[in-house]
Image (cartoon, rainbow, N blue to C red; front, side, top):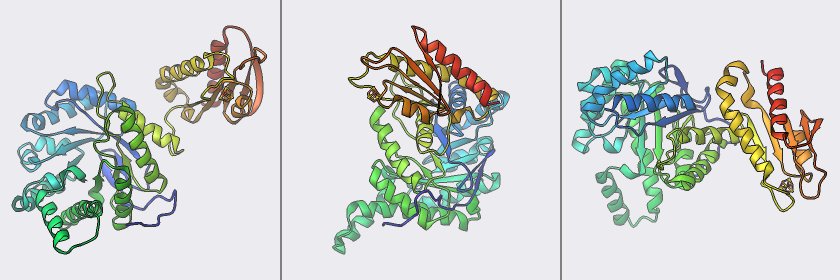
Length: 408
Ligand code: SF4
């Protein structure tokens, strides 16, 4: 299942309009997220959607799992419109999607995209009629559909058939390869079925999620060759905290660098103290680390070592990051392009001046036994040297003046 796709060349896809944005290879990679509120709690869901959109989520998905949730969708959308939030809303449907979309035409009409999973649409006998029903509603309402397969929900009957074929034919294809093929076949067969029912290919987005990085890469490399539907990337059940972030970043970075992926989501199991917006921030950091899109000025800092006389440089880089976060809502409006700014905060003379010269603004703090002075560099040239106990405020003043001067 290895295909050779040139690095950095975006795989060509159809363009799919979802609400007010387009998704596909001609457009920037879109970040999306999903609420974890009970959708029938209108205020909680509406508030979380606003927070996710404010953080930079370009689409927000909500679960529509029962009648109360389906009934709440219209009110949630109205509140968003009243507050001038036009972020596209995606409805996540499983098992009863055909019934809910039929019984709640308001939800069917205000959602910008429906997400369905071929493994959760109904048993083999009911699959066709349930699937037909959903696709016809999408066609009637001119909506996009994500056909999203998931490793954890391949239907049991297909699984049993494939496994007994493998045993009967004494096939030496690995279990893992069989599963990947089933997942790909399941979503592409469903997409072809939707097209045969009259849904335009330019209304379909595909995803095939697994919880294993290597499998995910294999699957998406195949999908990029086998279809032209835009691809939604994401590792499913990625887990908690740092584990989930590292696994997701590894998988997404490899695929994106191969030109695969048109919209991304990082699924993080929420920790009590963490905001739901963390999944949006991680997506932004992945795209920004790959040099694809910048969202905030970048602060480069060295890791520190035995040459560093104290932790002042760590505190300084934290203060600058926090100053940037506080200022960004205003800067975005007042200083277009400021997100491309690079700032270096370095701990000593070894790499400090060199790294600072590569940044737009850099400061090299004094290390052990060095002259107690902090040279500042602007666009590769030494600008001035700071001294004393107030280096942080002096540096922030220089930063603010640079922004006013260069981003207007
Ligand atoms: S720049 Fe200096 S303080 Fe920072 S890691 Fe390198 S040697 Fe250590």
